[in-house]
Length: 143
Image 1: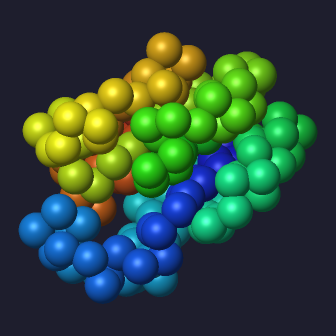
Image 2: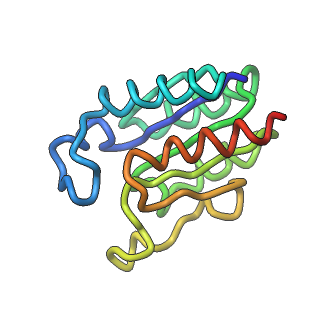
Image 3: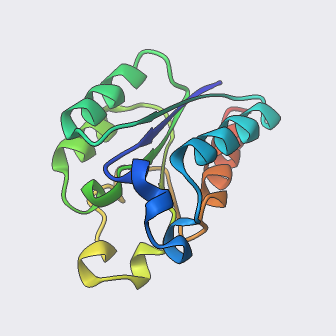
């Protein structure tokens, strides 16, 4: 199964952000891990990252044509982007929302996800390993 892994705003800077919250690795290192985990689970991952909301939405639309599952970490867009919410709602495959930090224990504004009611699963606060959990979830849904 092909899986779209879509990372949003500021995820390209995770190695420059608080390592306690974001895992202390670069986006490139995170993507390398994702590709390895996907291979172990007999999945094909397609990792993408953008700081442009419209492009993120376009990638959600693109996934309609090929993805058997989607992993999303829209970053701060999670808390207010109804455009991304609507794009995810269109998908007819399992969608897993991932956050490196535990957004439910952070600032008040981060505790709300406008995506939570349109995703199949949420993985929060597990650092980079959360992406592995998301891939395992998707792998188990394909059988």
